[in-house]
Image 1 (cartoon, rainbow, N blue to C red):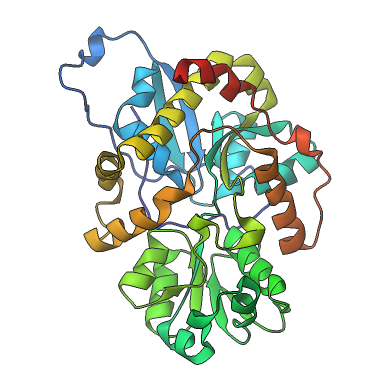
Image 2 (spheres, rainbow, N blue to C red):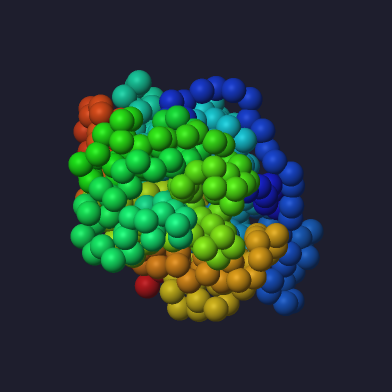
Length: 362
């Protein structure tokens, strides 16, 4: 059984690990998809694995597909998903403390933890493009003329003077806005007003009331600002329109070194389920979309369809980690935080699990 909670999508609100008690939001259960599948009592005992997520949202599409279509169960796994209220730092702390096996999140938190001596690394890619969007109002688009700009630096420079909402200080959304500002030759603290505002509900409220000119978050919250309130995405990150972060290993599976080495078979089963989800999204997009819909029942149909159309292309063909994609996390943190990562690139990830699974995937 997989337990999870649903809430408005929100990215990490801090980049430093903590060890606060984990909090799962709500609970739900999978429905059996394949007709004629044997009753649970007749099945062999499944191996339990716990995945920790910092949010719910379109960043996790292949995992939603894998869960809904029973790919984890097919691998003999009883996969439990815990969504952490305090974001990625808490989710990674749960992995470090043994309350969760795998952190599904951005490697930035992992890298900062490694700098402090924590033995963790990424072992599979979940999303291979930057997963947030920067949405600005139609009024700002008219005023700045940004819609007519094709040069990415010019677009970034056109944000000067705007008030932009982010999830929290040091969050991925905060770093993204600062990165874009610097890319456009702006000083993010002088040329922008960056407002930490919390989750998606707060952002949409502020955006609809024109208290902010724009906000940064991932789908479906970003899509709501476009469909519901006439906003515009500054860049289409899913299609790699922002060159510095194109093809970044944005979300990965992250675990302790000893877990990856000591639970090789379980790690391979998790990666195989993820890989099947990625493949199904490519080969059967309509069915994959239908499978994910139940995870977003409260999202209006038009917003859901728009979010899927925009974000489905942001996922790789395979979960193999590209060194260049991981390097972009180093670049992102250095340019967003102004502090370089000292962890060797080769120590930040391994493809041993993916490579072991590859022959079985054909």
